[in-house]
Length: 110
Length: 119
Image (cartoon, rainbow over all chains, first blue to last red; front, side):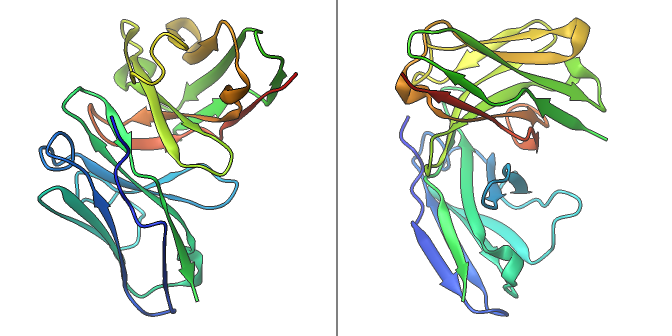
């Protein structure tokens, strides 16, 4: 199972919006609405930000939103803040009853 | 409060065995699957496998099948990740994470256990 494809890095200025893409295949992202996104600050454990493509856990800012079209899922962060600077990983359920992560995207807030 | 507390950092030699643990609290241990996730130094997250604590049924990623064993002890609400023969390439941070509902998402994570394998 190959990793999902994410851009290595994205950047934006405070207040702006950015979108991180996550491209899989018809065996994972394209077939299931079980896409989740995780935020990881340096030296910390990952934190769930979005699940089931577009749902937010309690306590996660509504500045974070998710969507999916075909084999590509996306995470959008609006109103960028300095604290959003982190690595972001997408993940999807797969047809082999497994889970696959993306390679990760480093978000820099300029 | 849901907590997953992992055992401390380990330094081992190639060929040695190792078992690291993940003790959960704040919810019914048998109500949620637990997954293990590897993160090699400077790299991304990799799903290793998961266990259903009710009956210790496991699923493994093909990348890790046969090299690691995931187990659970209901009596002490603890999940384990075990190696019988470590390799230098096993050097990584290992996270346990609770599966909210099969098959997604991983809603609570342990703090991580750093495993260093070096001769």
